[in-house]
Length: 263
Image 1 (tube, rainbow, N blue to C red):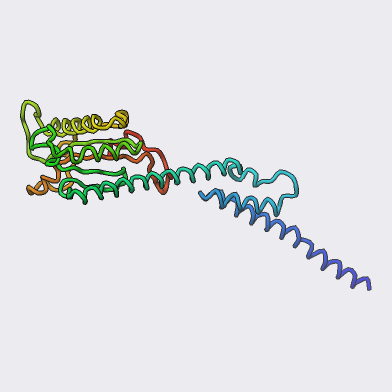
Image 2: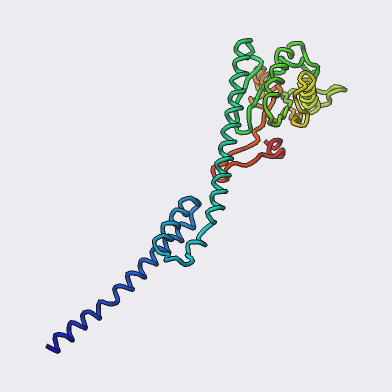
């Protein structure tokens, strides 16, 4: 009888280590999952996981997971800020799209397809006006035809708060006159002339939003190898610049004036 009791006691003692071992394995698993979660960028999932482990393992005292990431209040602020930024970006993009549709409708109704075009780009809404719709060749004096375009463009610009960059462009044909020693002077003077014209015909436009620049022949949109292509390059561009830009890796951020001119 004594031998049977001793044998039974040995079997029970040999299995006693399983309980602390299983607890240790569970805690190690929780630790590794938490460390993996911390390395991820999805803070929402991290917080959800931290709450689940806290409820499972915390018995009322301080929890390790309380320091696993930003506090709930901080995370709510980050998520709220991201949501607001995305909503603002989407709203601004829709506004620019609406402006494009309005101008496209005017272009079609007035048969201006050969003089005027629009394009929604990463930098904003681009409005391109060919030289012949605004200026005589080699001149920066506005032609009467510009009155069909200027008031409409000015009205659209008055409806939005975004910054406006007006740029002048030429082809590669050289110019050398007392007024315009090179294409630099011609393109910059045309941009300045058209900007002043827009401001003069609409008092609702804030001059602080506007800037003008001349690029000469150095930003062509077509090869300067034919008369038709050169005609495309002789143009004035009005960029309604996005206030916000979206980068999948960085999120929504505000664009600066340096970003605007650099592009």
